Length: 235
Image 1 (cartoon, rainbow, N blue to C red):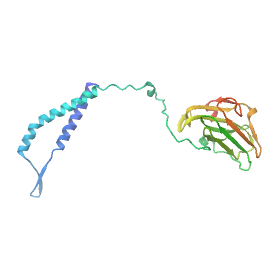
Image 2 (cartoon, rainbow, N blue to C red):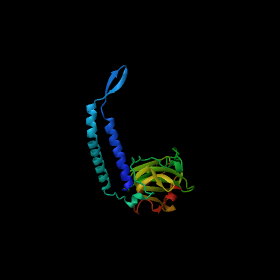
Image 3 (spheres, rainbow, N blue to C red):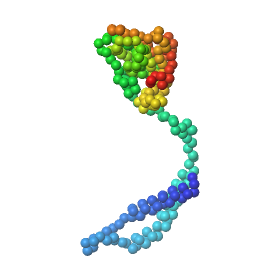
Image 4 (cartoon, rainbow, N blue to C red):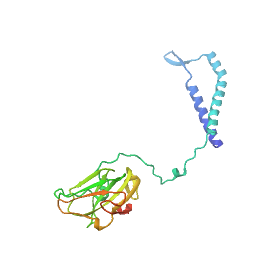
C-alpha cells in the first residue's frame, strides 16, 4: 500500500474517532430567563483537559494498529480466467416443463392442425435435456420447438400433413439468459446440436399418422443423425 494511501486512511480514521469522542460528550442544560444555556463545570473541564492528551494518544495507537494490519495483509491473487471480460458465470434456473417452447421469438408460434390426427411421440433417452424442432422437409420451416426433459417422453399433436425431420439442441443447466452467438436462451453445459441425417429418415404424415422417435446419444436410434452448429439450428 502506498504511503499516501496509508496517510489518508490514518487521517480519516483519526478524524472520525475524534468526532465520535466530541459528539458523545454529555451536556447539561439549565433553563434561565426562557433560554437554554449550557451548564459548565470548571472542575470537570479541567479534568477533561488533563485526560484529553492521553485519550488522543490512545486513539492514535489504535488507528496505527489498524493501518499496520491492513499493510501486512496477504495479497489476494485473482485467477487469470476470472479476469476474462468474456467469461460468463453459470447461473441456475428452474428446468422448463415438457412442451415449453423457448424459441417462438426466432421461429414463430407453433403451427397446428388439430383435425389432422397426426402426432409425433419424442422419447428423450439421453442424460441431457433437449429442445426439439419439427422441421417441414419441403419448406424448411421449423413449425415446432418443444422442450423435452431428459429421460421423458413428449407427444406433439395436431401436426399438419407433410413430411418432416428433426433437429435438436441437447444439454444441461438451462438458462433463459445464456447467449449462444446472436441468440439468447440455451444450455450452459453439455451443449450439442443434432439433426436427422438424410432423407431416408424423413417422416411423412397424411391424416391420422404417427411416429415414435427416440433421441439417442449414440448411433443406433430410430433415425440416423449428424452434428450441426448453432447457426444451422437457429436458421
